[in-house]
Image 1 (tube, rainbow, N blue to C red):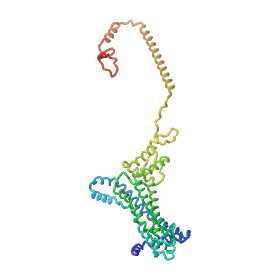
Image 2: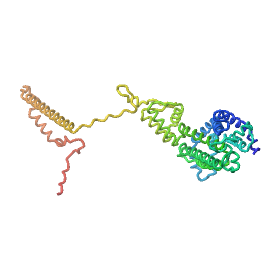
Image 3: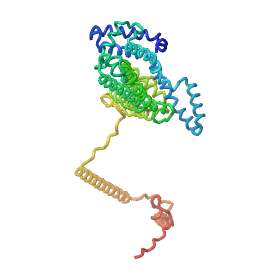
Image 4: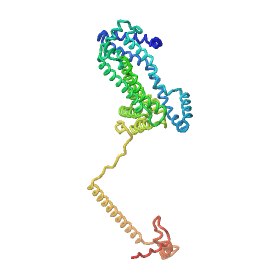
Length: 445
């Protein structure tokens, strides 16, 4: 144990110094020997470490996004070498190398905080065994041994015997109940965090080894925490429970505000964004503009949720621009009302109002009356024209002789009327066959 502690001495001393500084702060409020002072010192150490790990977390998010971009290529490799698993693995590793990413990048925060975990473990284990580590002197060591969290000593373990627990000023029942609850909460928070990642923030349309790996970790990590947790001191359990809760909250924030393309979280995010944009006509935050910009840049490569979002904006009379902003489209500009009030969509076609039965009958009567009046006017005009023609015939003829006798014209007109092809056949309607019609066969009774 001393050999391992010496290997982590470069980080054990800073960790112990940070704990002592937080203890001096909380000890002035709750008392130096209380469990609140030492417990909050450990929680504050976790928060400080996770804040320092935020750059690594951002790198993890970017690496995860790069893995999502490679999903179509990974699917092609799977289909091409589905019968050759070795060649499939080789092509996958080559693809990861060319893209500059790694499927194990999601473990970066855990790997980065593992030195802090070992350092804190040895500090708390030294408190349990009565050894001073780092800047923790005899006085602080005695104060830490007196501290209890919900009745369990800070350095007690689930596997400790009754004699050791009695020496720390507690009962074995209190220690095992408190440690068992902490182990269950620690494993459950780890499982929920990984399940939330798999069910909401993963593109389920593509099956890749990366997804299989994440699914395996969803069950492996909680079991590991449960198995190893029985050998952790109460202070270390507080550390892991706090860091798991931090990870869960941090992931919930990322899934809600920066979801993976093609995931259920993206569908929910774009629905919320559409409701806001269609109501206000603009994108409010820089992160939202970045997402809209990425969707516009994809063009025809958009997924189902992104196409639904763009189509919804179009129906609302809005258009997403290449810089991530949203402006009013030409369709909505043409749909402005006469008083200049803009509408929210394309102009609607006006439907004719439905008339009642009495109105339709009145309209039919009026149409019949108009037809009757027009026929009467046409008959009167025809009678006037016949009168004028009669008066014209009654006028005296000219005394000059014509070249043809008067009877020649009526005879010629009569002869023309008797020519074949004239008569009713010349007045045949369009579409009717010309020439003599074949008589219809008599109907059989």
